[in-house]
Image 1 (cartoon, rainbow, N blue to C red):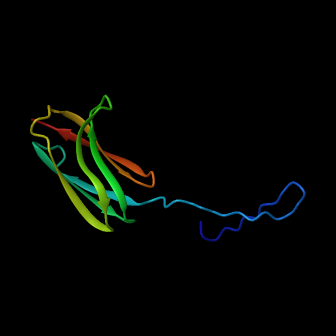
Image 2 (spheres, one colour):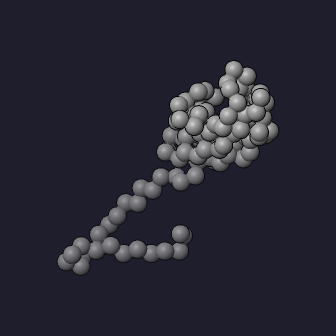
Image 3 (cartoon, rainbow, N blue to C red):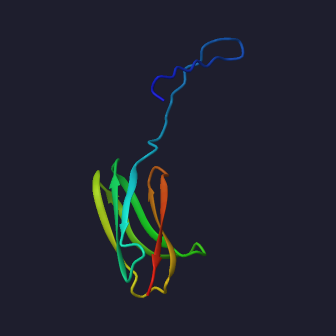
Length: 113
């Protein structure tokens, strides 16, 4: 909230200076996955809003990582990555993107063969 003032004081009523070191809350957004459901590949489109290290991985319903689609530094802007699941059985999977600041988002992917 941009229009909020917070005053913090000690138990004796003295004003206390606070350094608000708030991390960026949104460093990327998943735009779309198309097609979904898919066979055998799908394209994941995402936008990086703050440069940094990014990891894109695919997990099965047991939480096991079955593929790593990208790991490394990404610059600001739109990006896309292709997941070719030719050697993966039909099922529901989760594509997870994690930024170095801790932001993590997942999108469900349905593979139909």
